[in-house]
Every structure is written in C-alpha cells, then in structure tokens.
Length: 271
Image (cartoon, helix red, strand yellow):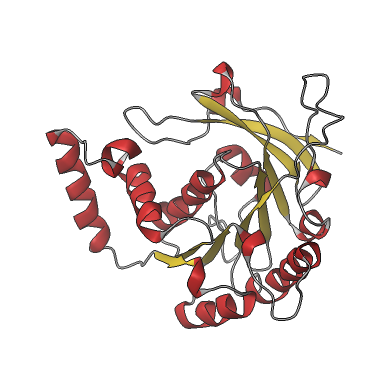
C-alpha cells in the first residue's frame, strides 16, 4: 500500500509487464533462442528500457560480443538510428547530429549504465564480486551458458551448476536476465522439411534453466518473409503458469526498434 502506483522492474513490452506486475530481487528471467535469433538485441532492449524509463542501474555482461559493438547497439536503440549507419560511419548529417545529442545527454545522466566484457567476469563468483561493487538494479548476462565454473568441466553439468549459482547469489542482489540457446533439433525430426515447434524443455544443456526461471521467453521463429519486420516472442513460463506470445517490431532500416506491436499481442492463457 505504501508503494501504490509503483511497479517493479519493467522490461519494456506491455504484455509482459502487465503479466508480471514488474520484477524484483530473486527473479531470474531466461531468454532462449538459436544462434543469431536476436537474443542480444532483446537483452539490450530490456536493459535500456530499465535505465531510460525507470532510472534503474543496469549491469550488462556480454560473454560473446565485445563492448564496443554492445555500446553501438545501445546507441542505435536509444537514439532510434540504424545500427549499420553507426557501425559503418554512414549516417546522414541529421542522423549524426541526433547521435551526438544522444551521446551528450547520456553522458550527463546521473544513472550509470555498466557494460562489461565477459572475459572480466568469467565465473559466477567474479560476477557476484562485481555486483557487490557496482550495486546494479538489473543484471543482464548475455550468453550465460559460456560462464566458467571452478571445478566442473563437463559442459552440461557446468551450465546447470552455474544456473543454480546465478539464482542463489546474483538474483538475490537484483533481478537477473540470462540468454540461453535452444538445443539443435534432431535430424530425424527435421527430416520432413518442417521444423517442430520448440518448447521450454528444449533449452540447451540442462532442465535446470527452465525450472529456476521465474519467467522464460523463447525466440522460435525461423528466418522468413514474415519475420523481416516483426518477430514473435513466446512466453514459455510465467510465475503463475501463464503461456502465450506477443509480437515485437524487428526494424533496422531507419531506426532500431523492438517495441511491442500492441494491437497484435495475443491474450495470455493460464494453465
């Protein structure tokens, strides 16, 4: 009652934010997809929304992509500019001024946005120490399956152990989002030319990821003419058994936009 009118951490998609009522410490958010499905872009969208609209301090740890590319992508989303124009230094004069204005505005913000190379936080223990130092409001681990473990060498057991450690030690400090990969479909299943629909049970390496996640999302659509401008995000697991999906923009032409297409959002089904 004292916090009336406030919500927990929001991810920037109305369907999801209305379903969760906001996220808090202890929550683990999982985003799964095959390679090049757009996981990093969506993780950046979540972190930037928390920073720009809620004044939260994000800690974005990239295990796969170097910080320069991450910052270029962040700038493209925040300034609503085409990423290729920033990456290739091919912006128009107007776009360049828009980018420069956004950089100055961001530099003057009293709320920091931390981007960290995964080589500096190779294990959950390293990440925990960094969180204690920076005190973020939202932790994002892009490519969490690449985290190392001090004793476990088997890849499958290592991912399971790290998922448990993230839940125990990182989520207690701040809500945490991790990106994972779907396992490759079996050849026999793809032999008829049609890929079977993937579920949360097919997240790679371990079942612990789905079990530990408060919220699990999936990027399941293959590349096609229908996904050039829009993508469907599947809700694999909600706090109260919710399932469903919502559609987001997938726009890189004159802007970089992954906002929800609200008029096409599907109603959630409670099991």
